[in-house]
Amino acid sequence: MAFENYQTKPSVVIVYTGEGKGKTSAALGLMVRSLGNNNRTAFLQFIKYWDVAEHTFIKNIQSVYRDQLFFYKGGKGFYKAGELSPRHVTQKDHHLAAQKTLQLARDLSQTGKYQVVICDEINNAVNDGLVSKQALKNLIIKKHPSTSLCLTGRNFPTDLFDLVDITTNMTKIKHHFDQRFLANPGIDF
Figure 1 (cartoon, rainbow, N blue to C red):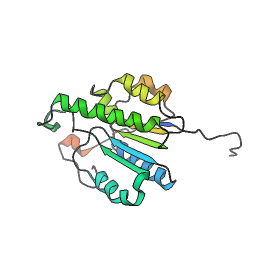
Figure 2: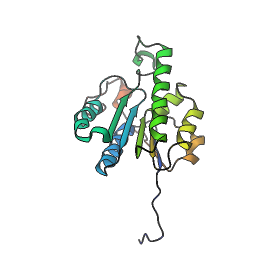
Figure 3: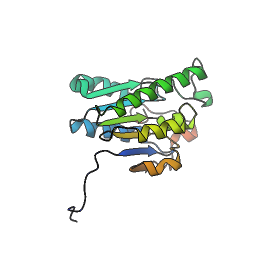
Figure 4: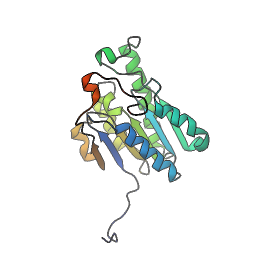
C-alpha cells in the first residue's frame, strides 16, 4: 500500500476506555513510545493514590529522562466504590484532588511545552462527577495544537467521540476479580 496521499496530524486525542483491563498499561506504552521519540511527556493520574508498580517504574526512570518526563499522582483512591473506597478520604478531598489534577492537565496541555499529556483515569473522574463533562470537553478542545492528549478510564462520554482521533474500547471477557479475587502485583497493578 502506498502512503503518498497520507499525511501526519500535528497531534491527536486518544481514548482508552471500557470495562476491560489494559487502559493504564496502554497509556504507559504510549508514554514509553513518546519518550523513545524524545518527546516531552506528562503522565497524570486522577484516581490512584496507593503505590502501584507504574509509580515505581516512573520513579526509577525519572533520573534518566529528567525534565522530559513529568509525573503527578493526584488521586485520592476509588470514589463511590463501597468497600474499595478509602474510609479516611472525604467527598470534598476527592473533589479537590480531581480539580487540582485537572488544572495541572489544562496547564500542561495548553502550553505546547509537552508533546504528549496522559490523563490516566480521568474518564472515571468524569463518570463519578469529580470532573464535569464540560471540563473534559474543554480540555480536549483547548489543548495546544502540537500536544497529543491521552484520556483513560471507564465510561468515556460517547457524545464526545467526535472530538477524538483514536478510541480503543478494552472489553472484559473474564476477570478473576468477579470471583472476589484481589488484584495480583505485577499483573493488575
